[in-house]
Amino acid sequence: MSLLAPARTKPSRAASAASAVTVALTAGALLLSAVPAHATASPTQIATSKSTGVTYLKSLQAADGSYVTGGGLSNEWAFSALAAAGTAAADVTPGGDPTKNARLVYRGQLAAPGWPSASPVVTDYERGILNAYAAGIDPARVGPGRNLVADLAAYWQTAEPGYYGPSANFNGTVFGLLALAGARTQAGSPRVPQPLLDASVTAVRANQHNDGGWNFSKAAGDPNALAQGSDIDMTGAAMASLCTGGVAATDPAIVAAKNFLKGKLTASGAFNAMFGVNTDSNGWAVSGLNACGINPQGADFTSGTGKSPVDFLIAQQFKPGGGFKYLPTDTNPSPYASVDGLRAVAGAGFTATPPTPTTAGEPAWAATTGFTAGTAARLALVVDDGTGALKVCAVTLTPTGTTATLGDVLDAAGSATPGGCVTSVTPSTGGGTVTALNGTANSGSSTWQVGLDGGAATGATRATTVHLGDTVSLRYGS
Image (cartoon, rainbow, N blue to C red):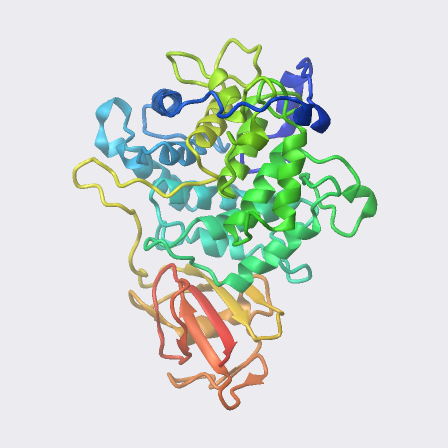
């Protein structure tokens, strides 16, 4: 895995998996085997796995309520697994102290000016979006000065539309799509326009290898790279990104990915991954299937011995402790393996809708509702002139009140990241109707319209009210 990957690095896993030995079943062997009518992991077993898995993840919480220690990424992926298993982060407390609940502490860490580091990478923000959302924190409204969606928009690659961060690290684009498509608004609707997701869908499609899977590095346009064998982990993540981004499970790209995974199934129900049979790879693959609505215990993923990937994951779980081991031969649980295993067994992709907290007084969402006058804030801006050439950027403005206007955003966009998002606007002052943007003028029924957080588009005026955390989408058309 790329060192920029959101969860953990492949090198550390490679060392521990070097001695793993797996026996792969070929596609022909699968066809010759009698497939059982049902897989062996029952609803009761899955429920028990979820319950004990949550207990283990709760044990990882530090005394101060944190799942993130120091400057590393630590165990914050636990929020995605906890949510998938039905546990709200706001209900996870050290020693029952609600003032140190996991959501409150994590939000404070994300909002800190020094987070994530002096030299952040795009996957820092993608990881933050996916886990903040699962923890019940609006990722665009973490605090008056922290909008993770805008932070991600700043990594848009103008020269390679659809990619986030250096395109060579394809992993960053996959998780960018997962974050923007998966972390919905508090009302449950998409927060970014579909054309933005479609641009990344196109990029992910272009990187699918000839065998139907994906790898962590860019392969698009390179016949040699596309001919290389794919990775189980990244195949799960990439197919999840496509399905979360709106691609149907019947799409040829998803069918090819499904067949690639099917061909890697072993007798134990595990997938024969690059570093051997292990819980993390299996978890990522199952999460990919989950995200696409493909049953990981269906006939296609039940081995000749009657084992499914879910069977394998549950078999790696210590009983009664609830933690998952990384390798079948390990004698101690692994936090990362426990997160990946639990999230997959619970039926989730790479994030999950946050459960409503049961703790009295805890709201469904934690979010800052308005700008703080004099405090710089970032907003994500998407400009679509109808030609397919999207402009995406993060705009930093310093509001004078609790709300701002579209005019304020357009004025500040001249120094946005990346540059070139807004080059000209008419009128340049006042609160009137936007009649031209970036050289494209209103004509007949085709006009500039604005939508906020995926809401209905209306005629764009400089006076349009914009709130903290809004994703501002300007679209030219009828």
